[in-house]
Length: 279
Image 1 (spheres, one colour):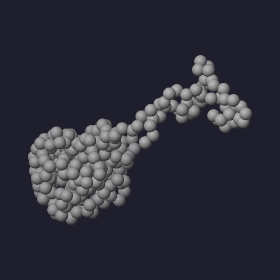
Image 2 (image 1 turned 90 degrees about the horizontal axis):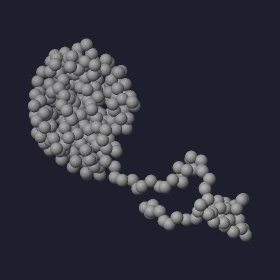
Image 3 (image 1 turned 120 degrees about the vertical axis):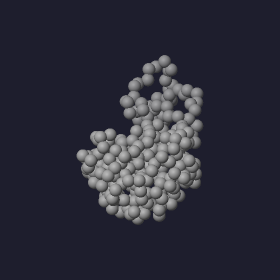
């Protein structure tokens, strides 16, 4: 690494005409410029190039927000039980996985958007938590997750796209030099088409009118998600909604699951590793 500490001030040298800069012509004597003489003002671009070198870069800080969109209908008991059992160790599991990959994060926050079916469950179809800072608010995160009950939903499909929309417009952190905005969807059912008229009043205006508008929300470089920081991980069946997303959207990883299985075929370790790979 080059030592950027400035040495003693040097007296500039004027080159004779026709000589390379800083090099006197043959037989010519370099003439020191008196210190009191006013130096000519260089063009702006040249001034920038002559400016003192910037300080050595410091260590960058990384902030990661994760939003879990969790299908909490009756069939999802297997995966929901896994999540409840591991909520208190989630932070240490993620950090261990990242360390093994040579990664490190300075700030980790998680929140949950639980969903059922707005057509069958009305106001109970969507439930949101705030962001929990881990590990400081580990107990609060675990408490919210353990309060989720797998019930309702009616027949397939479910309101997963509404949950994804609420996740996209989360109050993402603005801290850190580098950020990741990770959305993880867990469901064993396809998704209803978006239907603004069916939304409970509490969520009206927060969900796009149709899939095209939802796609625009995901892709908009001026939207709530950073172009280089957003990630979407789907643990969902190949079917309406989820296949449409994985076939069109960028920065999406789709782990196809068996419809109606409650994601019993998805191991908790696979979830942690997928999150680690996305950071």
